[in-house]
Length: 195
Length: 234
Image 1 (tube, rainbow over the protein chains, first blue to last red):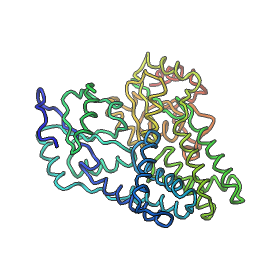
Image 2: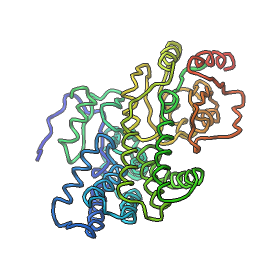
Image 3: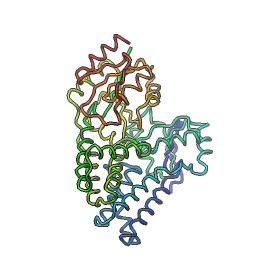
């Protein structure tokens, strides 16, 4: 656990917020999708075997370089993994249900995490705040829009696939705010040209 | 006075639609093993599925593959075998990693235009796939790269505000009247329409009249000349 951040040199001029699981709930929906996937597969194989869930993760990881992050990639990986692990015996009807998992996940309402609205509003009194979120552009945009309206962002930065490729303005005075600091900081380091 | 020239990506800078068209033919060949339906009927069903899913998936290959799988299940009444679904998926993956092939003369044209105007790239579709193409295309003249989920008047209005130019100071170069030309002209901008030999049905805009603000060119080497014409009218 990180107990304190090093004191930045000079005043912080901009505070960036991550989207998924920092401002709004996301992982819960992915977990639900994974459970639904296992429920469908239970008609074919023993889903209590931890290998089944691990296999899906392996397929998702190997596809990451082709699909990137997001629900559509997850759904495609589920279809691929299901075909693979059932030795191609899965029926088309059950594959359609995998597609439906994707539809359901894309349709879920945006739920802000408790306290986010107040916290962003408070921080926004002292600093300009921006939203920096990664993943599927088409899915992130409505979530970002909702958040912008509900959590009083003055300006929402666009979705990015890889942080370093969308450098904007001077990043030398940015400070990340995210529970998973290890994941966020390299991204900010990239913006700052220090990675 | 034109200040900024925007370039579209797919089928303006690099080849795209013909890869989708080939995927469509491969898809039809797979479905033909299950049902007796002509190409027109298959296409209509797939297009209807894609359009139905557009609001949820947005543009791009991943949404196309998901729609193809859905349409395949639907068209075959649930009889399609898992191995054939896998083939459709692999086809889609191939599309995502195909090499980026610039269209003839476009690299020179962009360089030439960049000597006179600020140039930006405005492309729509799947973020991850578009970023890959931008990274691999080798074109370095663009001052900004904008990957957007939709190219409508609202999107262009927002971008022009960010670019700090007025609509009449902006020209968009692209192959789609619906996405590249009409919304820009609607705002008071200009268009260089460079049709590609293949266009997705969804992008067609029959009988569009650019109201004297659009110049059509038949190749990348004519873009600079078209901008000259526009400058005289601007």
